[in-house]
Image 1: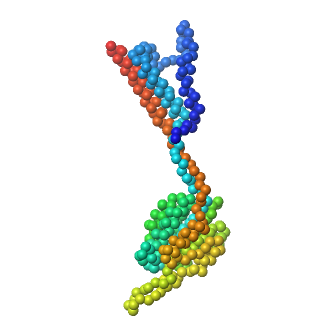
Image 2: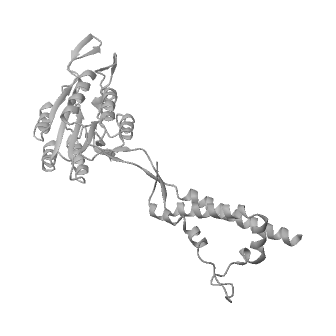
Image 3: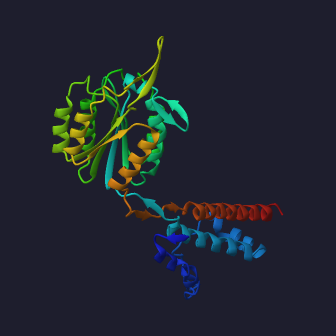
Length: 331
């Protein structure tokens, strides 16, 4: 719908009529109070008006109408758009260590490595987090901020899909990942701060230990949900046949459980894609998305359209006056 920022200016529309109805000035005055430009004065105006009385009056009336409309600041009021509230910040820390390439996960009937399974299931979880500000941390030898806090879930998912093994090393710096998340959370004071930590190993690199990072997280009131990734049993082929091994023997569940419990979170174990999906559904219940959303209606300025038309009509009016004057002189 169309609205006006200054609708009271529309009261100026009848002003030319009021001027027209004013008492006529005395004819015996020596000089006029208003000096008319040469292009509109004398015989030029009178001749043009005599030739065509209606056209100039209509054009001048339209110019006045359009000018007043432009002054009143017309604007288009768009449809309401939901603005998510800043009630929760969720940082997602993804392990890119060498062990994430172990193919012990099933996804849609196929055997895939841990990272591919994580991308597929975590991507759906990211798309559901409408109203949350999400960030993405990738860690291995070190921890790096891949995506800062944003409402743009599409970008976060894209950055996750583009991550590759070996991008930041081969080891696992869990403490550095938590410390980096704490640092990024510190800028926002009034929000629920949640760290989703996904790893398949134990802390083997970094400058900060998980215990030191835990103290930082507790001090900043950050809730950690830790997910340990990896199957319990895997068949490994060798020269002497196949044997059953535990591919998750290096998973430090004790430390991950401690990180989660002491920050008010919870530790989960994901042994396959179905288990991962169930974990994310439970996280949706533990940390529901914001339901109370604000709305805004975008405003688009339209004043330049009537203003441009008024200038165009004024230019056309001057052309008509000059053309009529030129035609009169040549005859």
